[in-house]
Length: 119
Image (tube, rainbow, N blue to C red; front, side, top):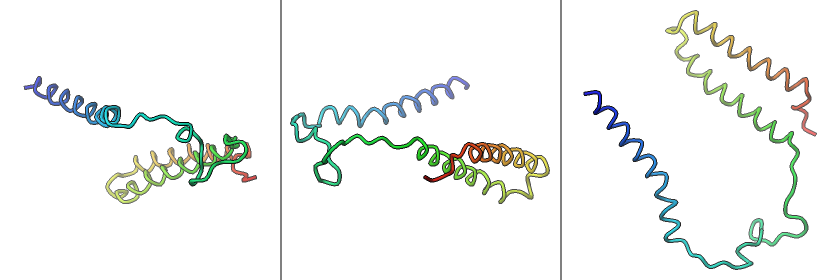
């Protein structure tokens, strides 16, 4: 009986790998292979670029985006907890307070380092 469970999991794993590799294999077979300098040229919005095409962005923008994602994910965890709060009890409240304190410490650290200044 237990071996059937492993067979099912193995078939599911093979199906997932096959599902992920199938587009790559089909693209390798069907994709056109004509190379030209115009296809390799960098363009933006259909226009040829002028000047340097590689632009360096400040790391602060990426950190700001990551901070946004952290607090966006916090909201994703906070909403179901608030909906089921009455059934979860006091332990869940303590866990959520710890979760929010960890995020508040991270926010205070980022604020203290000046990460949130949009300059």
